[in-house]
Image (cartoon, rainbow, N blue to C red; front, side):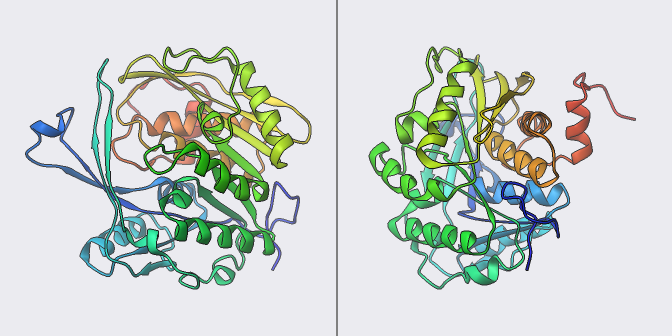
Length: 355
C-alpha cells in the first residue's frame, strides 16, 4: 500500500498516524496543594505518546496508540479514556501486572512543580517480542512517532522500540522522535548509547532546549536555561550537528523561557536538514495552567502540520500555537481544534469570550 509521506516524498493516499509508549495514571493534589496537604487526588490518564495520539485524533487524523495495559479495571479505564477521543485502541493489548503511576504537584510563582514516579514493573516495561504485530500495525500507516521515554523504561522496552522503528522503516513510514530525556529513568550515558541506535532511523527529531545536551552532549552557545535566557541562534548549530551526526531530515526544538512556575515564554524552531533553513515561531507569553504535555502537543502539532503539507514557517507556527494553548488547559492532553490553533496563529490572543 502506498503512503502519504511528506518527508520522504511519496504519494498522498491518506493520513494515518500511530505511536507507541506508556500511558500512565496521573494523581494530582487539587489546585496548588502540596503532596503533604492533599486529602484527595485528581485523576488524569496520559503519557508522552498517548498525548500525541489524542492531539492527532482531535485534529481529525486516523490516530492509533500501541501499548500494554493490565487486564483490570484501571487498564480498561486508560483504554476508555483514549477511546473517548476517537483514538484507535486496537493495539492497546491487555497484558502485564500494573499501570504506571505518577504524582504531580503543581508549582506556582517561585515554587517549582514536582513529579514522583511509581512505574517500576509496569506492563509496557515487560513487553516481549511478538506482543505487538508491527507489520499489522504499520499496514497503511503514514507516520510513526515515539519518544525517548519508552526505551528508558527497561531493556525490553528499548529492544521493542528498536523493532518498531525497524518495522516502520520497512513499511516506508515517516518516523519522528521526541528525545524527551528523563534523568530519573536512565543516565546520560545509557540514553546516548540507546538513542544513538534509534535516531539514525528518524526523519523528524524533536527536542526541548536541554535534550540534545543531555543525550548527545550537543549544547547551544550563550544559553542559560535556569535564568530563562535562550540564544535561538545557538540552536541552529545544535540542529546542524544533529543532522550531520544522524542524517535527520528535520530538527524541531521547543524553546521555553521559564520566568517562574506560573509564567513562561514559549516558542519553537524548525531546521531543514536538506536546505539548512531555520525558521522560528512567534513567541507566546503564557500564564500556565498546566505545563505538562506542552512538548507533546508541540510535536503532535508539528506532525499534523507536516502531514497536511504546511511549509516550514507555517508548520512551526502551528506547533507553537497548539502547544501554547495546551498549557492553558488542565490535564495531560491537548483539547483544542485545528480552527482554535489557526485562530491563535492569526493573532487572536486576547482571550475575549467567543459568542
